Image (cartoon, rainbow, N blue to C red):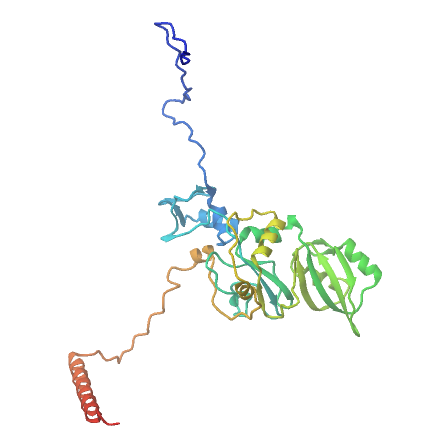
Length: 368
């Protein structure tokens, strides 16, 4: 019968040497460096939540208004799901797992400002935006008051930065109507570049698009977002722009069904394609299953209503502490103070009225 295998016995008196783990030598009174903490940077999470850009969130942290577990946060701080982040006494809920952002298209009409607060009290595009639960709406690019066309809103600061930062050179396409007509030499000069007050500028492409009488239409493409750049390029040849409309921004073109003054929300698959174009991470969470009716309702063109919008964290932190309080009522010198006799008189009057009502109801009971 075969015996089970046994390991050979060690010689008595000899033991295998113990392997000691190396201990880091530290100077007296100096602690050993701790392992790097796993998590995400605070200002990045705040920007992902849509509370503002990363630079704005760094400014907010430098102000000392944000705390982590009761300690004042520092720029570059790392947090995880177990940390409690507050703005003063308000707890902030941060998205540690990337969520699918929202993207809204708006056909801006002329006469509206692209700003959240106009000192002159003029109409702004932010007055019409629908309410949003997470973060705030960020305008991708700007259009001046006399320019209409495509305007994109999102609650993702990273997506907005991918569109607007100059290093990405995202194309913007405009339909321009001018009073006059360009010569072939002028069109060639506009594509090669001319000198403006703030430096050289040029169109990536330009071609004529018809027109009647003295007004001619042109389609132009630029890769910058400087103030009134399209108008200034035409005005360099003394050709004033009578109408300017943006018809495309990057991969998004102005939908034909989106009429002036209306909005449209992109579908989930369209937002995923937009994130892939921007090179941003796509959330691993599966897309929400929607019926055809719900999908059509969620992406239906609608006319916005004027409503008050949510402010960013930086704006809320800089606002005065008593800005949300109601104004105190002006004291009146002849205001009469209610006495106990008034209460007794009112109670007697109410009892008299109720007793009369009961008698009338009893008198009329049974008639019909």
